[in-house]
Length: 186
Image 1 (cartoon, rainbow, N blue to C red):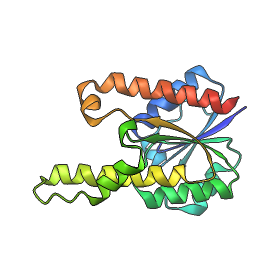
Image 2: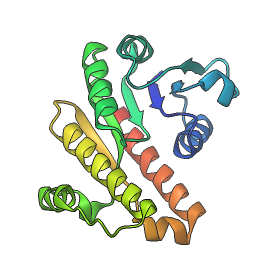
Image 3: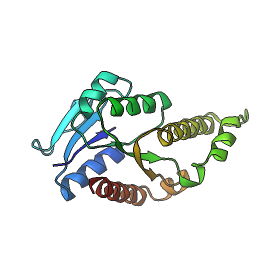
Image 4: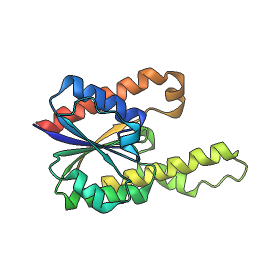
């Protein structure tokens, strides 16, 4: 039976992915999240292992990933955490990563250069925060892309599309994740 770790399992994408994988596959799942035992209820005790942990805790991450064939990373907002996940995967000898990624039109080196140099002091605090998140996600994306892992990216739609139809984009992303799992299982 294939064993897959969902890092960030208590978040929206993680929970939708978990539910769909339990319904449509026979995969065994490692559900890893901060305060996971408080935030998640076990659905299938025979197929799920819930682990409390932080992405920066290398030892706990390595132990959680041991025996997994693939890892699904639900959030790449912190480049330090992304590096730690890559390191843990190498130590646990897991080579397949399925990861969320920023929208496709931002995932090229020129977009990253433009974002890194963007410093508009007239931005509202909320827009400034969104810009910082976008920068961090792009840096994490580049770190993953440059790793030696076998990677399948699931690109998120633009912020505008996500806000326009929250349910549809989530379902679309989960379907793409399922497709990635099928590719990794082959």
